[in-house]
Image 1 (cartoon, rainbow, N blue to C red):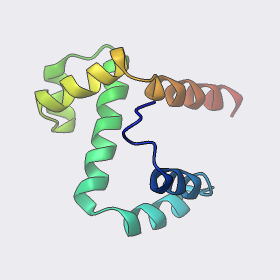
Image 2: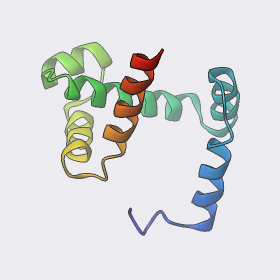
Image 3: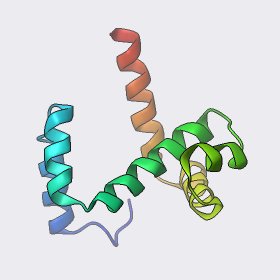
Image 4: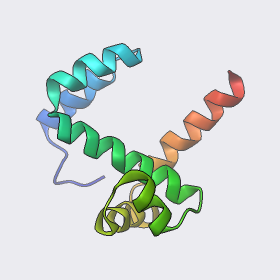
Length: 100
């Protein structure tokens, strides 16, 4: 965990996010919290990460998502050297699909 982001304010934000139970609740909360561009940037990074995990090329990812190669590279660095947060979420989504 990055000690720079471990603050009381970030703790409160994550506690709030953990209260959300449905996609409509997420839409309502995140539309209030983020600008449209911030939300689109976050979702783009998540899509880039998913495509990198699938083994897609930077060119293919850039064409499909509109992400810059710099963004794709940053996401790739997080996948390879980060805190495994993407992997945690992707694994849980995959498990949920198996159960559902």
